[in-house]
Amino acid sequence: MEIIDWRDASQNQPTAIALGFFDGIHLGHRHLMEEMIRMAGDNGWKSCVLTFKQHPLTKVFPKYAPKLITSNEEKLRILQEMGIDQVVFMEFTDEVMNLEPRDFVKKILVDRLKAKGIVVGFNYNFGKKGTGNSKMLESWSKELGYDVKVVDPIVDKEGQVVSSTFIRNLIVNGKVDRVAKYLGRDFSVLGKVIRGKGLGRQFHIPTANIKIAENHILPDAGVYYTTIEVEGEMYHGLTNVGHNPTFENHPFSIETFIYDFDRDIYGNTVQLFFHKKIRKERKFDSVDALIAQIQSDIAMIREKYVKGRSIR
Ligand SMILES: Cc1cc2nc3c(=O)[nH]c(=O)nc-3n(C[C@H](O)[C@H](O)[C@H](O)COP(=O)(O)O)c2cc1C
Ligand SMILES: Nc1ncnc2c1ncn2[C@@H]1O[C@H](COP(=O)(O)OP(=O)(O)OP(=O)(O)O)[C@@H](O)[C@H]1O
Image (cartoon, rainbow, N blue to C red):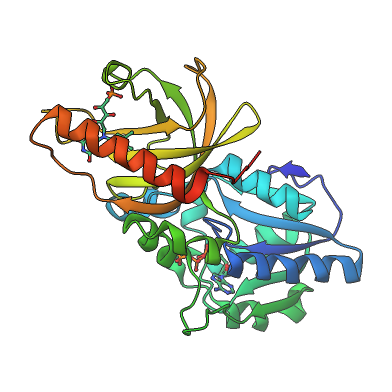
């Protein structure tokens, strides 16, 4: 898979291009990309995804910019697995933000990226103030020499349209067990194991404290059944997300007790998969009561998920 700079017009192979921010690369996005790959394959064009390096709202309305389900690295990994030929990560600069819809299509898609096919979703908007839409793409297609495919929304059994916003809401409400159905994979975060306050080890419950990117979305405070990939191996885990309210002024942390594991992994990069919220995070009257609760959580999860279930 090639990563192309949109300013580089030197590549002169015709492309079929899928357009969108594609946070999460959920089932709707996948469906759209599969249509694009099919169009590319049928015509001997390269399959191409055009997206932005940063969410447009970080520039337009920073206050409303969402935390993201996928980092750019994760997006690239998934796109590569899908067999996409080219990815273009545009910087959402002032120049790009202010492009009139037609200029975006003509100057960037057609002239530079050699678009012969353009695939977008039913609700796709583009160009200055989001004034461009699929009807416009269709109206210019003959003159500018490309085919357009507008894909219908993917909806679930209850008629809910799958969208990045809907999935983000499930995550921040702790409904991580419902997310896999829409993403087509478990929700996960990538992070680095850092030093905590060392209290856990003191309580004989060692935990890996995980630091993730500022702009990555996280489930709300609580205790979650998780699995964790460490150095290529999967383990069961129990993760607390929050401020550890039993302790005054404890910093926000994500910490995982890893089942049947005893290695020093400070500095390692790990991937944490969230499966099920077990309970809310609570303030306990004593440290002893907190430890008793954590031990009982650990035992309950061992019974329910860990025993006899190898994930390696
Ligand atoms: C499974 C699990 C559940 C936890 N639940 C709570 C909780 O409900 N309330 C709380 O204050 N801290 C909770 N904690 C966090 C502990 O307070 C934490 O492990 C301890 O403060 C150690 O912090 P440190 O990593 O900074 O040393 C939980 C930790 C784990 C591993
Ligand atoms: N459920 C869906 N089915 C088919 N196409 C979709 C679906 N959701 C989004 N798309 C299309 O995928 C492309 C990328 O859309 P976008 O990144 O805005 O995703 P989104 O899920 O609609 O996000 P948001 O919830 O932030 O609006 C667009 O062309 C959009 O129309």
